[in-house]
Length: 203
Image (tube, rainbow, N blue to C red; front, side):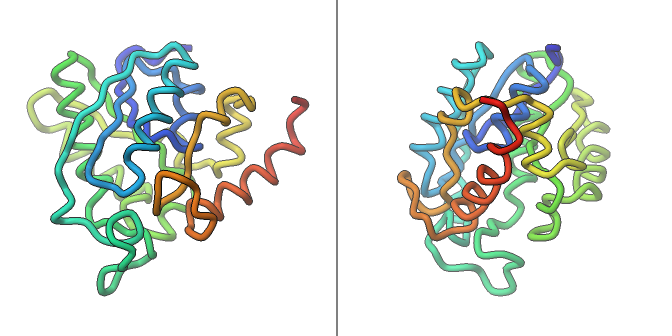
């Protein structure tokens, strides 16, 4: 079923690809914010949107001067809750999505945080999204912010979306580079998730 008032942040990863397949948003949005794997992510996001026959757009949000962690320069910031932590990243992305929603006369922006993301950084948690939604929705445009898969693990999300190999094959997960490094939280998660997911699917 199409969610015809929603902009979905599409990074090209497993979670956002599965959420796109599940929710069928009115528009998918890729944000280049200066992350190291942005070229691979942009190609994957565009390919996922095309595979699902969903509208796609992209924007550039120059945040390199504010970045940190594996996706920035391989050096976690002092006090970082996880190696890949980029300060306020999801807040920036949600705000960009809300601005795009206003431009396209849409009313909702969704991000693909899943259960457990909040254990690694607060901006992957349900309380974060509830508070961000409150701040965004009182502003002009009244855009709502949500994370519809926040109660699901990635494997559960893939099952909910009935994600097949033809979709997953377009996705990327590496935090460090445009080719899988095999040695970052994104690559480790992908290996574990797919090892758990494929035995459950008759593909």
